[in-house]
Length: 230
Image 1: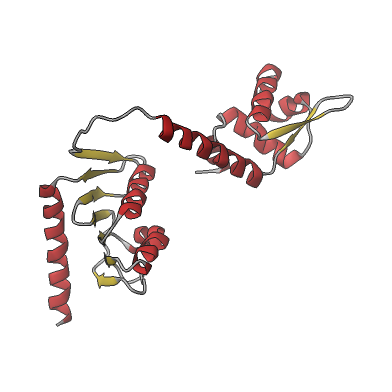
Image 2 (image 1 turned 60 degrees about the vertical axis):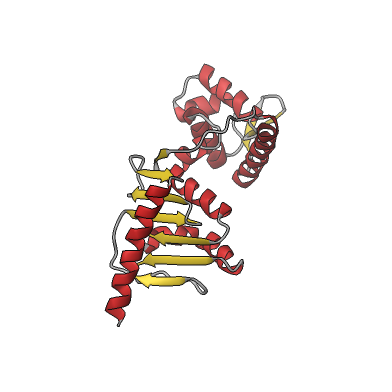
């Protein structure tokens, strides 16, 4: 993703993100100057500038002519995160009571949501985790895995040669691009193929039969590695 696309993840429309980026680059500008510089109509520019001010991405410089100045990116991102945390706390506090429905087999789609699910599973891990994936993918969860190791929880990783983690049990396997086999506490599993695209899908479940199936797959891979080492 590029800078403009990343800004849209922070609550800006693409047009607002384009104007914000131009303000960052050019400094203080009038609405007329923004419209001339970007090719966006003046009516749309003034609407977008008003929204940027309301969203905390820009401030107004008063004078003979009204000018707009972009807020520093770091400050804007931090303010937006703080705002979302406030909303999140309120949502958690005010959420309706859920009925007790047992989870079945859930399809997790897109790169972002697959990673989010793994982060959540790691945060709730109480005893052990088994993780089979290529090293570049496992690397993204190094901090969380290190924390589990520090908490004396069992961390077993099956991956290619480039990943090391002190305190974890590492099994070296040939690089298998796109495969994910992930189990926490012998109770929850995430399995599927991963390419880092929006089309990726994995299956998540707490169903014992799927957990046992993936666990058996991992055990077999460990047995092969151990026999080869002998």
